[in-house]
Length: 210
Ligand code: B1M
Image (tube, rainbow, N blue to C red; front, side):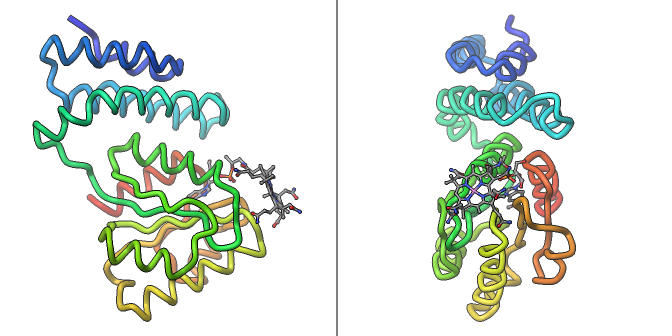
């Protein structure tokens, strides 16, 4: 009988092919898909998140682990749907208008997915109108914005104001992050949360949905 820790550890080593194989084996052994997700894939991704926060691993290791998680998820997703396992929440995320930096945003996305969220990624250079339309279309629990430039972080304010004008502000929690962003800035512009790194972002997001 397969030990789900093996999936977690293989994911942390970033071996996508082996993770895929192990998830298939677990399904064959009739392990419940939710257990494979929680005690294999999510556990592995959470551990990587903690190590990343503590500077024990760096961006490349996180990206490789996330690729392995996706490989496992591709096998697991149809089974999860069949057994009715739901995501813990929905997040719309993007890098703000004028800003093309997406490495950090992608890490946040991966950690959120690793924590069990469905994430709709709007990409980079996302205008306020596009964020607002996505909130209307997808009804997310959380809207996440990333900015890496002091010249673009101000565009977060426009998004929050546009949400207010569209009477959507109360319907969604707004989380922000990126190198120039601070807790103080989040409070100043009326965001609900600021997270300094991807692992904290996943932890903070969970607090908004439980
Ligand atoms: Co640019 N760049 N860049 N750049 N770039 C910086 C940000 C800069 C600090 C470099 C410098 O001058 N020292 C500087 C900004 C200065 C400032 O505004 N204060 C800068 C500049 C000036 C520029 C250009 C203007 C350069 C030029 O053309 N003259 C230009 C702007 C283009 C544009 O966006 N319109 C530009 C372009 C680029 C590249 C395209 C070449 C490339 C981006 C590639 C890409 O992203 N696909 C690039 C890069 C790579 C960087 C640096 C070197 C690295 C950024 C990065 O990926 N960090 C950066 C210097 C640096 O930081 N050392 C720099 C790693 C990443 C994991 O960290 O993004 O901070 P980070 O994300 C973290 C947290 O911030 C947090 O979690 C992540 C993971 O822990 N986080 C969130 C991020 N988003 C979050 C959202 C959340 C919560 C947490 O909630 C939703």
